[in-house]
Amino acid sequence: MCFYAKQKYVAAISCLKRALWVQPLNWRTLFNLGLAHLATLQPASAFNFACAAVNLRSDVADCFAVLGASLIELKDPENAARAFHQALLLSPEDLHLILNASVCCLTAGMNNQAVDLLRKFNALIENGATCTDELSDLASRVSIELERIQPLDNQMEILADPHSSNLSNQTRMDDQEQVDMLKTSREIIEREMEPDEV
Image (cartoon, rainbow, N blue to C red; front, side, top):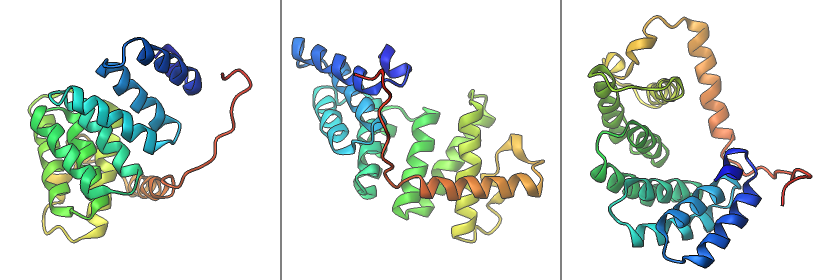
């Protein structure tokens, strides 16, 4: 996973596959292989490794989260939502899972469920859960997208991030541009290998 942290994904996959050969029933290796294949835009392989990890450890929420992320990339948002739902049953107060499940529901067109999950996310933040800037930014972008898709009838206060109530119009426009970029980034882009990658 050191290679993974350095974004040398091919080397990371190579090392993880050697580890899997030594210990084929190690769920963590399977889980990490799923992550590495997601990073290299290989969702079918990521799905296979995530399924194997789920079969070995169906009590670990992160395994279901990687499975859900793989299914989103495979254009199967309904089953991805089921995977995230199972992950939330196992870890109901994990902010990352709640927000990713909200994004998944939004992708699947389950807007009411996405709103409910975003409310839960904001309630946990208000109750003192620690949230990174990246998560807070993603939550505000999801909120903007939900507001754009459907009229929310006074739900803007519920969805608004408590730390972003003083956003200017320019910031909201920047957020909308980022949401549009998220949509276009779903297309698979070929990545050229670096010369030092294995």
